[in-house]
Length: 326
Image (cartoon, rainbow, N blue to C red; front, side, top):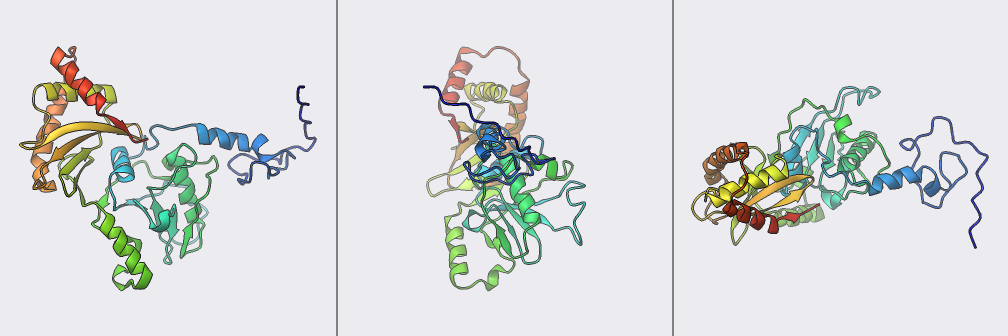
């Protein structure tokens, strides 16, 4: 038997109510907009759509997109000073708080409002909406109205503004890579007890990582067995794979003796080639070979002829070893 059609409520939605202004409640609870319907059948529909809609390049349009991806996926401990867009805090009273992006915060908090009013925004947090930029913007907006000395709790982000709307599009994005997580605390040297122990555990688990200075968005990391260079690139994937295949077939894809281009992975819509390096090869040792490779890559990207047989085989080998992180 067919189900009876649900009765339409005679109660109109609250004037001016929108998904962004309606609080998120349980799916079966009455929608806060006043329509008389359950949340899942009213404003929850738009929220559910936002959850399902995956944004493949959430950081596109932000300065330093490749470094956003690197800090999200590759770098254990780093910070970046952020600049809010004009008008974001038009109604703010007093001094505008400083905002610092951090790779990760204690207990994976989305954000933290320090006692002095400054804000730490966590990047390596769980995404609930399918759009990481929207989730981070939601955490930032919560932090702006959070009492100093308090963390921002995890919640399901409602449809709202994105980072691209909250941050100054002309501001520089300059990551500072750290050896540990002392940036969590305003005075790490005075930490004692469980706080000091937690900080020590976090520092012990961090893989040594350094950002190369001569090329964009390339990060060296050291592990017990071998070192690696992971280089986040904004070149469209198909073009980049063709160019890497040309260089591989010509024997020009390495970064010197004992190094090897072992593949790549996808992360937030960008491609990240990865090289294995000898354990004795430091980040400083990578600078000149990486700069030389960047020149060879630019030349290979300019070639428009069809791939040769050897180049097609090299490309297939690269594709077979490609991993998608998200």
